[in-house]
Length: 370
Image 1: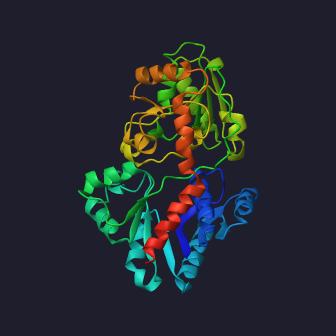
Image 2: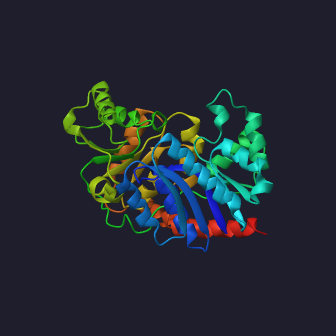
């Protein structure tokens, strides 16, 4: 089967979205599928890293240097290739406008349209010009919907009164074995790895740290590698009266280095989330699966998005306030050795690898092809 991922990518592994797409679909390509992807790059060294990863996969990249006209060319040649392709094909969308356009020309494309759900999928909640009815109309016309978290299915049913007639739940994948050397240390080092988007509520970590004993320190890595990231962290330290000796800000760390430079020798791993729809229902955090691949306990928020992925007996769950979050951190840090929660999460994450995901995805494609 030829599979076209119709969404522009920043062809750099600095992008979490690119990591998710490239690694998920490279794994799927090994099930005798041909994958077609398009995007742009700003640095040839970053593109070369992506190309190195895909060289043993059946993945074709339409790639152009970053600029407005090259972005248009990249999309144009991708669409032309897709239109000329006479083989059986599936077109994956994650943008509603693209899903709408593909549904409209489905007969010309001779393809099945599968819409992949992410944090932005229920766009009428965030954009005034978009209506709930128009979104449902698109969802109802695609051939299938790919959810990345069961909580998205729950939210879909709450919003529209029923589940889509054809769908599958495929959480984002994780690299099996990559985190095997990450060890826990009883040093009261709390670690956060991720972006600083407002809806991810990184501020909760700092407000909680202010309530904890001074023996707790914080290691923070992520962001976009720009000066505003450090300014943001400094502003949170100042707001909550946290001295600089308690915070080790590493900035952006290459994905290949996160095991050794960020996660290793942490005491507790943190996954805060905000009081918003994206956090409660729509996210499928890659970092959660990476955390789960280690022997280090995790503290996160008691939301459907987390419990749909891990259940009740894996993550130390907290209410979304500093008092509850700090209590959960104390509880997680108090366990010495390998806790039953850690054993459970290591077992669970084996079902969330790229290989396991591609098996289920491949079976779903076979079902669509009938």
